[in-house]
Length: 459
Image 1 (spheres, rainbow, N blue to C red):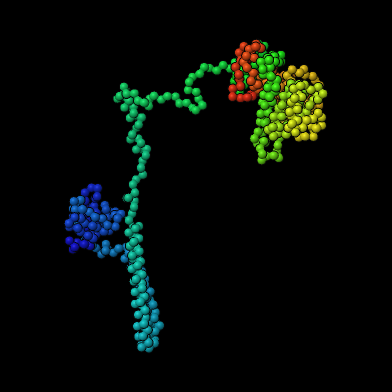
Image 2: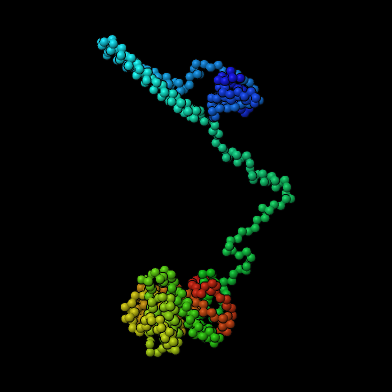
């Protein structure tokens, strides 16, 4: 079999191999296999350098006669012009040398000719060595990059055409139509609930849960839609008096109202942003204007609680001569905080404040048109004004931005600003004793809440 090595043959194989053409490099008679080099498959260069084909896959075999054109590879074609170029340069150089030395002696010409021939032979050997090396490189490049790769790259996959072959909707409809008695689990889809949504159905909400015997002219509504009626000053006074009779003393009420006023004041001052240990240079200042009455003592209580939160406070006393017992007790506790107490309005003018808590008059006070000096100062100051349990018509000469009322609100006018209601924990039995037949707490999760005039819904 060795006589066939180096021959070119064409093999017609079974599908999907096709036709192979190449040079025989090895024949295994035992395993009945033949190995080709420089192979072509179906007219395209084979991707591997050698290919081994079994005899059982060969249908027919045909020898290919080598021609002179076929024997010349691309490497020899590149070699020829390089060699011609070198020989041409050498011949030109030799002819020029012969012409320049033709007039010299024959002996000298003979010596020079022999020496030049030796040099040319050395140059030729170097060039032949370089050509062989270059030929190897060209053969490697041809093996690596000479074969086209277009036939090895598959066509782009058509996703739309492939999806159109399988219509899922029609397929499932066909299954359901063939077996209508089969009940699938996917058909039983229950309602999906959010984490804050109730699964059990509840009764429709009742927005009017407070019914007072003699409501006043204004009706309020909370942020959640609950209706809160306003009460008259006499009914409001009666509610607080009955609560004291049941054990909710004035001191307890003052502590609760002072706490609510403190929390609201801290929010208005900026909360944790202002009351920060690393923000001592911006410590807030609060001025509390107090009269000698119930609301005044609650204002002093609020000033004491603000001082315990780290707020700088100054308490102004409107009438220091005629002080109530509750007022005297609250002032004694407040002085232990080492904060200021003054009876002069000029001391207020000398200090810069961020918030003014107005407690000059209570809800039972008869409002006079006389503008007090402290009220005039509060109105001229740029700081926000928070009124604590004010009269229904407000404090003369002062327009408050916020007002905080305990238990149930009065019919406040626009001078009291935005109304907030405070929960002072009055039992339901107290409301029943004063004639309020139905009372459900509207506060919910809040300790104090905002009230809005209910202009759209009639009572």
